[in-house]
Length: 318
Image (tube, rainbow, N blue to C red; front, side, top):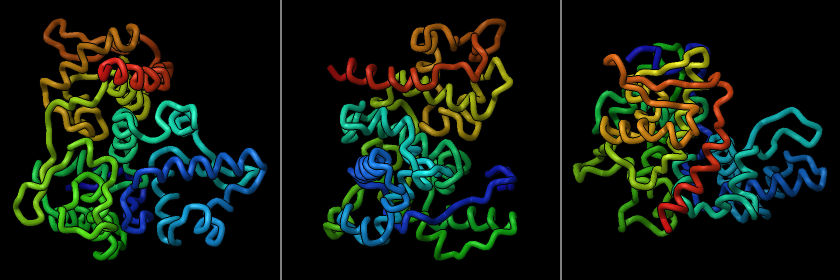
């Protein structure tokens, strides 16, 4: 593995969640609290101040820190320099988590796929999540294998990260996607909502897991379109075409992050024309398999695609 796993200017992050994976209700609680402070002109820093937060959220100090971490990693909370403090709710949070939003209680699988995309498509806060889905050389893995690779990456970059820190981060990663066994205590068995996506399964061998590649029944065409546009704007701003291989294999691409296979990726790509009103069109002319962007990449209707993702799923589920 080389240093190209993460951008040269980026420092990987392997902590902040306090070993707690994301839990149901956390994002809504943080969003509502920040919005309440914003509306009352109260410093948003107070949302996470020890005394106030413990009483407000009904959890311990470490869980409060974890809630803040996950809200930031999910793109539902942004760090800003503003007169109302260091945090603000994002447009995505308002659209999804407002009481009249698309999915305030996270009952729609589109929200879960959106969160997975936030965690695994970029390495900024959830570096282990990004590495496993985009750089892990094997479909099957165990915790020591991930620790070995990430430890080597940190050493190559001259970064000092304690082995215990990596171990805790990898454990949190596994618990994000893999259902806990029935023998766990009630507290420890609380599942992260992303276990519903079925992206990683325990193989039955001790401490061994497998990324499940193939079609994804709950991944709507609209959510896929959103991911394509987001990936294009982040990684290929100057390009007007992207190859099938780039969409399938490049780090941060929909094929990688959603763990698709060739056939399922092809199905999504060939439906992009209708899904994006011709902004993105799949072409297989002259032996070239490529996606064509008919507008400037920065003009892609990213937010519109996400809105459509919720309509898509409701139509399919009806």
